Length: 340
Image (cartoon, rainbow, N blue to C red):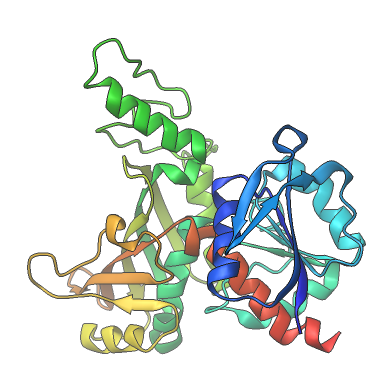
């Protein structure tokens, strides 16, 4: 049985990646439509060996379509998401619009697949923030074993998390620093990103944290366990694709690093590369194009009674966005749509 699938925002980085992953994973598609704004109408995008021309989102009729993967901003999703859901097309939304609404499931399939039943409420499923998605994949199996009390995470997030404009700005600034007369002004980011790091992602909040940091806190609690205390510092780094995270975890029970390593090796969606030698770890450059969340540098934290440290890397356009959305679609097909 195949599905009629819509990719909304098909000309953007995440939308194109959604099409790639649907084809790579051989998602059962009977018919597929690529939608974009009117200014991108007719743009060609690839779906496996097939070339699709984008259709106009504003005039598209979602009736009779099964699943819509949304990769557009929150404002456009607010307008078109409910229309699609009302027409009977299940929406899997990559924006932040619905993530914190209690009756909308926020899902990472390796972590909380049971939450898929919540789609019956409003016909909408939220995809988590890119930095949260990879972290909770690594945290959940450890939480199941020893119960997490507290997480301290510092992120090293690539510019592709800010969209095509972020990629272009890093590229242009890098060239500009070497080519006389080239511009190196900051436009997308608050400061120069080339050969620099910026401890600021999204808007500042009243308590001094940024919205990106708040997202990691709120989403980890919703996806895994509301009792977990999380504090985050989110940093933009001059990397094109691939988010990295240094994660410190404090547990209720003692968890030996060797046991933790074994648990992670047996957990879905994770690859452990942890050799205590030069190059015995994964960097963002190496994770690009891969489905996995990579864990390295696993070690005991001697400053607390039950603590572990680890390094976590993943392709943010894949597990942090497009891949997770497609995995949700697979889960939806297996658990909900076949029973409808």
